[in-house]
Image 1 (tube, helix red, strand yellow):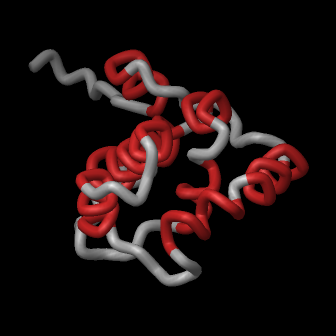
Image 2 (cartoon, one colour):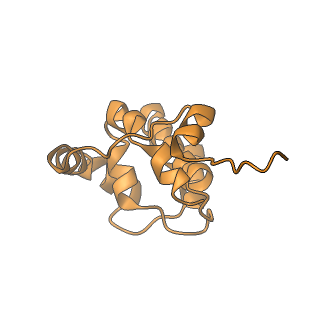
Length: 118
């Protein structure tokens, strides 16, 4: 090596992954999305904690329609892959609520969340 120290930061991580790394949404927007996601959260969890492994079984079952299964798959991906959490661990209920609004969910700074685990 040439003696120069290289730095791999959030911006480089975002360039490589293509994930959003910008600011978190405004609290008012976040609260609105979470409130709107209450019914989907209840449909999926029945107000109990749920694991990523349980999300997979819900996606394989008949209780949810295809759109709801897609939302569960996105939550599973964030939980198990982007945030590198054990599938047997509880899924963050806010993530389930956020999945109700696919545009919001897709634009959320998952890159920032994921990078902060490094």
